[in-house]
Image: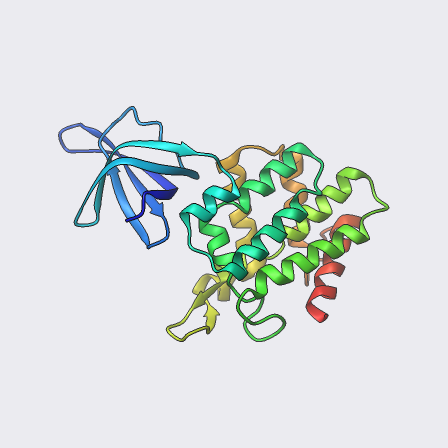
Length: 260
């Protein structure tokens, strides 16, 4: 096992003898493993990049004695997870678009979302659709970059905060596809998950947003609602849901990117 890892979840447990320990879901270059830290005072947290300093791996059970928390940045992502050069290129291009967002909270939030190893490892290789547009490897991130660039261009006449929402919404609008699609046993063939079939990628995207809102605890409730509004108004939407100027820009940018 490589010594760089992403802590994608932390479970607190107590043994039958009353001893506290943490069970971790680790994500790295090789695969996902479960590890155990026998230390109730450990500061290791969910959604962090760490370098394991002293650890013992026995039968897929990992005892971590010491570790170093790494910066939450693109370098840590690339140190931890394997990406092809093409995937790295698209991830870097996506982060260049993020830097157009001026609002500090929105910028910090969207940066963290697209540095999340669980999400970006799928987002950077999944197709944008099963049978329609950009249904090829890296299609999802390519389509998202095109959508975000168009949303940026189309929102130039709006206020800075509205423009920031347009870029952020465009970047987030299809994240639910990482939960809606799953790879079959064939080389590059995807199909819908059972949740994807029943709920669709918009609802799964909002589920992910709610998870990230709670995990990162950065955005105000008002900003959270606005981002969910943008998500819900893409494609077909309920007639009792208002279509704001920003949501309309993202919707049109998405449709334009899918058609070009």
